[in-house]
Length: 329
Image (cartoon, rainbow, N blue to C red):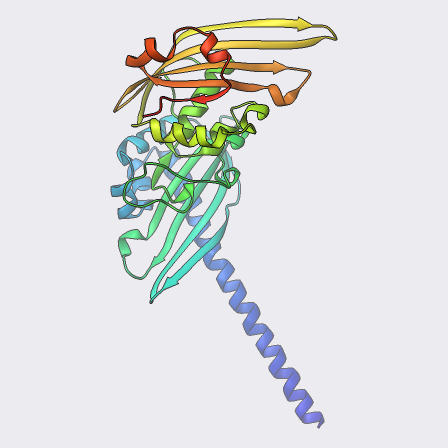
């Protein structure tokens, strides 16, 4: 009996060691993927080596992305400077198996500090595809200021529903192939309205509804019909962003009884894509100290520049219609 007990304990110990070893190997396997990606990217950025970044991506991601080479140029322009520090990456795995077709992806993130500004790097990397080796490699890479996570972090868009994506709809924003960086506009961001419209355009470019929601006043964003208006905006806006020019801007501060301060801004921007010229017309209240839910865009009107006389006769049509307006076609 005692011999049997000792044998059972020995088997239990060996089994536990094997289980622990398996877990460590599995953890190390993912850690190696993440750490290698982070190190390779940082080294390439330091050396200004575009080809090394290109080699990190899968062949299919490069061919399926919207202008991958242009995105690559934007990345190096955006993060130029001295890299001060890099945090340890971490990721989660997504695995699927269907009739013997196995796909495994890692979704991860880390941060880099460049010229003492912290940037978040989100990525999706396919580590196995039994049917197509051309899918193995980085699928997408997103770099944005960590302070703007509310606008760019994919985790903030729980209701991600892309519109107009060719071929098939990706499962998440990180499954959209290519490289995303906030695009530098031609206009200098001098005020709150400039920053808001820029984030809206960025969000449209990557089918990120949350980025637009976060630009609006909470009271407007939670109003009836807002989500339908938001979907209409994504359906209406076409093309890849090319330029942004501020045509008009004004602001008016009002002080009411009880030290209530309201700052109202009105702005018109000319936005050009590779398919169309648009006007973005915004009425916003970036300051409203009596009610935080009122801060943000109150009304956004997006129209084709050629239709200005029809849909923008004067400011009253904007101010009196909160929410999002696009022509119904």
